[in-house]
Image (cartoon, rainbow, N blue to C red):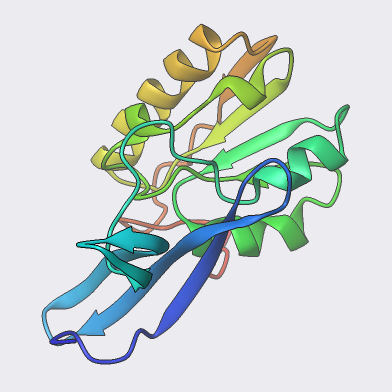
Length: 168
């Protein structure tokens, strides 16, 4: 397509482990852009389409929640941060809503019912808003407790768990 080849893609699986589609990242001269890629029928053609989910989107890394039912849950902003945090926090299940801070309300948060949840935002204003929205959505979905990490002052603007730890 007009965006060229994606730089990275992350699989989105249902709770049953079945592939539902991908979130694809394109690195462009003006920044990055994301597009969902799904298999199904569109305009009477069966195949892969650049078409997204509506509401009830699965969490990224959803099957890990079912595989580790007693583990605390860490919610981060974006698939890249989730993959990085998974290695750094082996006792947690790390998940992310699709499209990070833009539309957490379109995600199905019900798998967090009864769980201990910590939200780790990016170090910027959209990250702080994301954390507050996700904390409410998780609580409304029945999470047992919800914590928000306070990213220390002085962290670089936009810093997340995929980035190198800032000094100190």
